[in-house]
Length: 115
Image 1: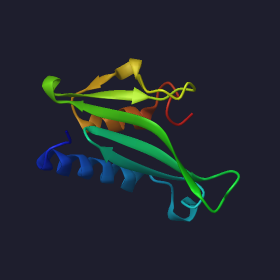
Image 2: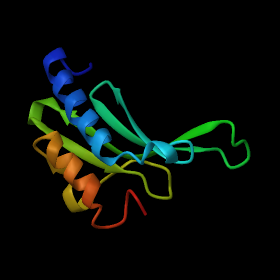
Image 3: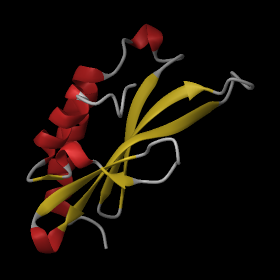
């Protein structure tokens, strides 16, 4: 089950504002870009780069994910370490709104998302 229409509008607004402020400059986007996708009740943020062995093709690498827990009225943040599985982000696993999600992503206090 996905997010309802009103909630979806808020999600898109927050994520588009994030991209407007945090995406690399236009002249760099062929080499590095950031995007997001909404799947069901989750938002995924991806790093987009040319493939190392096929530079004319791009690959999306997931950086962070958050999932709306409707029954608890909160978001849960996940990160993907080297085992390539999603894990709850221990420093701040639960948040009340998407602006907190963006703050966690920007600060990246533990180097989990941006290295």
